[in-house]
Length: 113
Image (tube, rainbow, N blue to C red; front, top):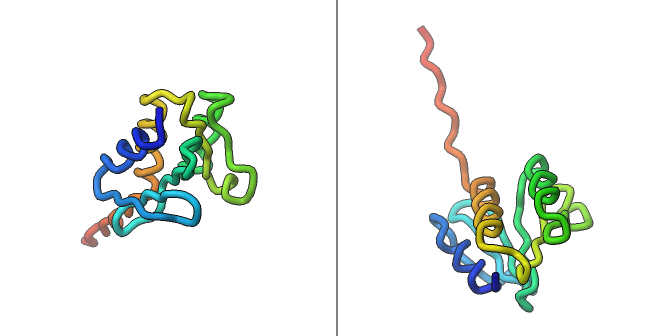
């Protein structure tokens, strides 16, 4: 998977935009948060998973995925080596990260009485 292919998959998710973010390209949900970043050299993609999702994905693809080794990683930020990743894995990661960044509607209150 190339950087451009993965970026197109990310931008294919609803209400997403891309913009420069330090030395990377960030993808975020409109009115939401950044859920993925892509390195300028095209070698890796970082996605924001939940801390519960992260070990499931990392364990399913050892050597391809890993928690970023700092506080960002403890928050769920996970790095993927793009050159050896297949489309299904990239789509699954981007979808999970997009879902986590999408603003959730406020819960409806139950009517009393």
